Length: 112
Image 1 (cartoon, helix red, strand yellow):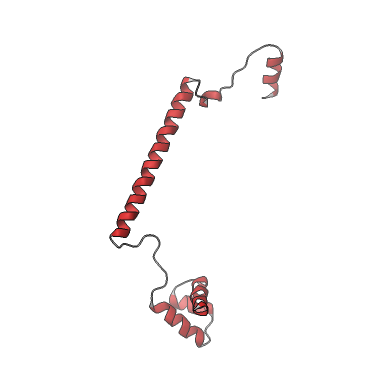
Image 2: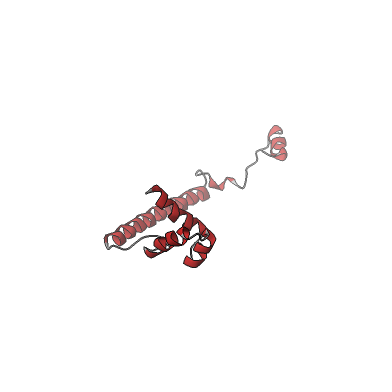
């Protein structure tokens, strides 16, 4: 409560905040709660539709998400360039990928 609300309460006066419209005891609060419930229901339904679309796409064999930056030929070329002494920056610019991708491809070799 603000100073003015405290002073009014001490003097026996009742104050009501204009921001209490979100309480369900007021008509506007019940409307607000109804709108929020409708938005929640909409979001749940949209989520179900998105998940169903992803399931259907996977069932058709479509890949979901961002395409891979590295195809099957790029790791082979990256390994060959690395073996010949090329830097990761040079390999990345030649293949059109980031240095992090080059390091990840080379690290996969070390793990295998």
